[in-house]
Length: 108
Image (cartoon, rainbow, N blue to C red):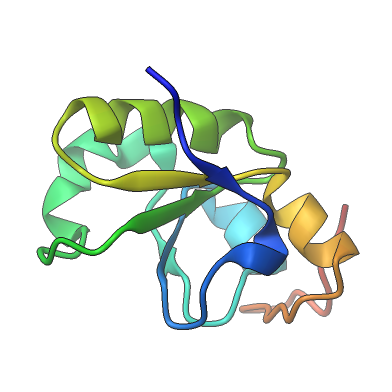
């Protein structure tokens, strides 16, 4: 089964962007408007995914975890798209990033 992937710069404005990184990675910097749902707790938190039929754009740090999550979601009835290169590529592309807590900026 082929899986759709997009570059960070090609994620549509207003898309459902799901960040599957762990809390410390999220705190260091994430895409504005993204939803945080760590891959490690995805199965216990599926009800937090949007209930509409819109596509879900899945991002992690470099693209590995998001690839696996995207595969699983697609196999289980969701329409998911992997964000290729993850937040590292997002940052390198100059796209906006916001940080939570004490973090000042995204750390590669």
